[in-house]
Length: 484
Image (tube, rainbow, N blue to C red):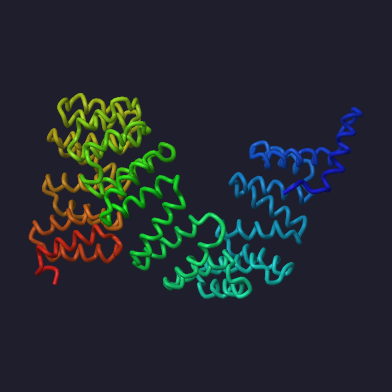
């Protein structure tokens, strides 16, 4: 928004005063700071804009335009606390300021303060009866209180005048979802997709709707839409690759995985997601011949994830080649040491892992690598301690759960091992590997009825999980009496 015209006379006076060697008045100094903030904000220099806007309100804190400017700068920089304070000052100085009231409605919603939302929205409605912004704000506040019917009523008031109002459609969809009216929720959110704007938030809500309603076709369609809408987001691409693998479209899945590995910055979240997708699919996710080319040029963390997959696929020598020039990245060092330990010099590999853990005691790659080598060396209790540390930090780590269970079985603690697998199933929303291990353990111990019940409960809790459904189908085919 351009600088208000009221700033211009002060700026002209400031220029004249400077030329004459005089001192600028408070009005002139505040206007100059506001002009600097406005220009910096327009140029994307948020730091300068923030400093200059604060200087303006510091000189004249009784001018609502300066607080309005500070609020805009704070919102642009994601500083919602400062934005809230600034817009409150705007409204305190100018109770009819529509922009200030609208922003306070939105910020109070983010702060989950429905009473404040109602207060600001009511002020707006006095200024502009029928304005959709305060009506949808009041509806969202009602939804935060758990009143889906009131939220729907507010949304319908807006939609009656404007059937394509984005905020009202989304509000109606969220209200329907909270009330378990999945078809209504999906229709409302689907209706927003042709409207302009970034679709990712809408698609994420749709994905949640289809997940909760166990609509597999809608879920798959929405994950694919998200991947298309977020072409540069590695997590969106990996989620779609997982669906492709799960539905047997392996060639497309491999292309999606290798492409996703090259997107975005090197961070643990993406590396973990990359490994999870591959491990869920198993040894046929990427053939060994494809791993080295896929790893070339990747950041160390992602290369370490692919190398760990190679180790788990029985290719430790290949993993060492993949990490030969990965440098001192802790994950790369940990996987390299694991591969070396599995191919020969275990004491040297354990020493290398100890060095990684001295610098980074909670590194899950290093802890799991050390646990695996300690188990191979016959040091079960020490291996169990490392695996349990990983589970404590990340209850959804499937490999750590499986290793912990195996070590507990190995020392005769079958009850604790089964409990580990059950807890893991809940933490992962029904991982098929844990389900298969649990069913096998219960069956082997002479409890096929318990295995059947566990698989039935897991499938009921995760109805969209095709891998889990296949595990249950295969187990039931082999134990027909237990699944009747």
